Every structure is written in structure tokens, then in C-alpha cells.
Image (cartoon, rainbow, N blue to C red; front, top):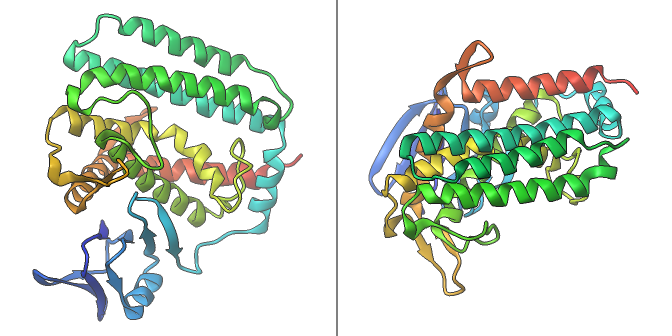
Length: 326
């Protein structure tokens, strides 16, 4: 369970071993047991007593910007990070094994995109030329897998180029599965120039926060990246790993758009033409995404929730770093 405080004026306090949410609608007490995280947006408040209870219960507290990106985090000092993990992580970054790892990540991302295109097409039978898009993505996936280099830095520009071209084809294709008023020509991030991109950006922000939190708990340094290595003061390893899971956000957002449930109350348009989600839009997306993450799925013969699957992957990555030796 996650506590989401994104309404202006709402506050969170402590009541023994539970939390009390106070808003214009009244007060609600929630036991601390079972809460995984607390997400706080601008205009909401949390007391120091509530923060200390969260720390005691190993509940992460995230402060989110209006685009859904975590800009601050409070976590328990019991989250462990041993030096061998961080040393191995740094050594891994400059190894041939890192080349194969990042190629595998990008190839899996493209395969995920192909799978979602086929799924939407099977449900809607909307496209007659989807096979062409699938083949074009397969071509880029094969190019990624065949690329050779001693370290990631040598091939990173080429990989980014192929990944970007594949994503452009992917978004152009799946746009056909949503109502015309939501379609867009290009991905826009900072800021979004349409409601579909506003939903995608906010969803990716939620996913960034989840992955970074799991990395911290596993002892991985999110600021030591593999392919994303040049951004100062950014959790660049999160930007690498998220490529495996972006498809989850895409599925939730495109499903909402395809159902034609997104109304003017979900978002606002600023004078500069940028689109931002309003509380209703954020609430619906957060709930839909969390429900999707909590669904149990069978992956490689093992049934577990998507969130658990992602957590175990991050833990396996920490073990890889810990055991890595040049």
C-alpha cells in the first residue's frame, strides 16, 4: 500500500503506530503496517513525528514534483549498502560484461515494445501494416545485439541512436490504438505538449521512484550508471534499468486513453502550451499503475507481482555487482 498526498492542504501526522490524514473532508487513521511508501506533492504537509514513524517502520518517504518525479527521499538507516557492492558496481561499469548487459536491456525494451504492439492489435485489429513495424523493430533489435565494443562508452552513441529510432516507430504505431484526440507526433518530456505525454511523463516519474527505492534498499548506488554516465547529480543507473519496465507505464496509460475516460478535469494547459496533470488525473493514474504493479503474473514459470519481479531483479543486480571482479 502507498500513501499518496497530492491534494493542497492535506497533512499527515502520527497517532501511536499509525498515521492520521487530515484534509478538508475530515480525518482518517491508517495503520503503519502494510504501507510501503509515502508520496508527498507540493502543498501537502507531513510532521516530523510522521517522518520518524516512517523511518522506524522502514517506509520510504518521497517528495514529488508536479511531473511525478521524486526530488527528495527519506529512508531508514537500516537500508544496507556494503562497500563491495559499490566497488563491484564501479568495476562493472568499465567491463565487457557491462556491454553485454546494456545490449540485453535495450534489446529487451524493443522486444517489449513489439509485444505491446501485437497485444493492442490483437484486441483492436486496428492496423493492417503492423507486421512492417514489427519487422523494423526486429531489425534494430538485431543490430543492438550484434554491436561490438570493449566498453559501453565506445558504443553508447550508436545504441542510443537505434533505441531512439525504434521508439519513434513504436509510438507512431501504437498511437493508432487510441482515439484521435489523444494522438501525438513526437514524445515531449520537459514539458509535455499534449495530455498523452503528460500521462506518460508522470507514469515514468512514478516508476523512477520505485526503481531508485529498490536500488537503495539493495545497496546499489543509483548515481553510478552504465550507459547514462554523463549526467551530473542524477540517478543515472535508474535511467538504464527503467528501460526494462517502461512498457508497464505505456500499457496503463494507453489503456486509459483507449477507454476514452480522460476528460478536461484530468489535466490543465498552461499559457506556454504545456500540459500538466491535475489532482484527479494524478489520482487515477497512480491508482491504475499501482494496481497493475500489484497484479500477479507468471514470468519464466514463476508467479509473483510485477513489483516483486522488479525488486528481485534489482537484488540480483546487486549480487552481480557484489561478486564482480575485474
